[in-house]
Amino acid sequence: VLEGLKEEMMNVAKELRKAVFESRPIIIRHHWDADGVCGGVALEKALVDLVEKTNADSEAKYYLVKRKVSRAPFYELEDVVKDLDEALEDVEKHGDKIPLVVLVDNGSGSEDVPAIRQFLAFGADVITIDHHYPDEEVDSYLLHHVNPYKVGGDSNYTSGVLCVEIARMVNPEIDGLELLAAVSIVGDRSEGEVEKYIELSGCTREELYDIGLALEFEGFYLRFRSASGIVHEILGFGRKDRQRKLVDMLAGYAKKAIEEQLDTAMAGVKVQTLPNGIALAAFDVENYAKRFTFPPPGKLTGEIHDRLKREHPKIVTIGYGPDFAVIRSEGVELDIPRFVKELQQEVPNAGVEGGGHLVVGSVKFIPAKRKDVLAKLAAKIGSL
Figure (spheres, rainbow, N blue to C red):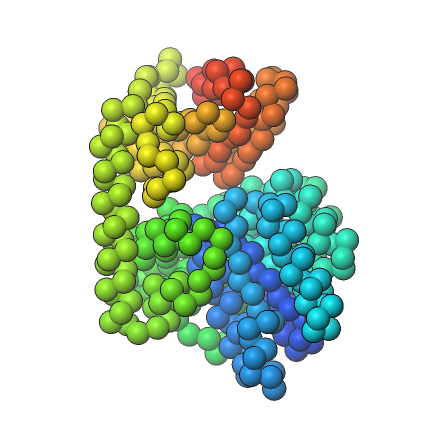
């Protein structure tokens, strides 16, 4: 798969190098989970190093490479207006060029189009590096689109892996990126060929899991801040002794928070076995989980799912709130983007939207239609 993507990845690397040599600002917008952060940081490290070596201005690295975090799993209008406003201000005040925007671990769905089009209106270029199932309409707005689905791969090739490979093409001298690829694989539970990055990192799965957990725990409380100082430290680009302590401490906090929530949450989980032999677990996030603390609903649903799948080889877990449902599955051939399209037809006026990976994703709807949407969703799983 990486061979198949090589040409497009080379094109992206050329585009990024060109931007650095022309002093054109680069905005890296990535999702806030471990995979997104690892991808974003890989590009950031390679580009900042390149800027330091090639630009006479010692301050250049601060304004030419900006890494920013997206809360939503797509490029939100809320994010794009901030980026655009800053970019236009820099054009006005400092005579900067309109930036090159790189979307990491998002940017390949139809939800991304409105934001992308806004930036294009001002002459920006947008590149997507993602491993979610792509919508075809996005491509007409993108300069380049690196996605394993385009060459017959799947979401196991994480954004972190793709960005690490591109970062190496951008700047072959950069070290320490194997760890980023490995953390993104463990964080996104990828399997198969990509697991060789875990061996290359020289860390155990447990250590990688802890680093990913520490990133997500800190990321949850950082909200929209990219906090490169803290994040680089967690990923081992600072003092090694401090990294160990920091990761142990943060992962410890995160595990404690997850355990506490899990004990409460399991009381609110209802499991039924459908006629087709699939176990369907439903969990009421709104009434059985704390609000505004770690772990967020998606993470908590994932943890419940991990517990349940030990007993049920074929299971779908749905964590639902007033206006959303988070879906996780094991041993079942789901297609969440297709489900969403069908639900939009079958439950009209429910404002259904969402997506994600084929077997992991989320659906949003209006609260009044929650019963209808969840009933249809259960029926779809029952008829697989």
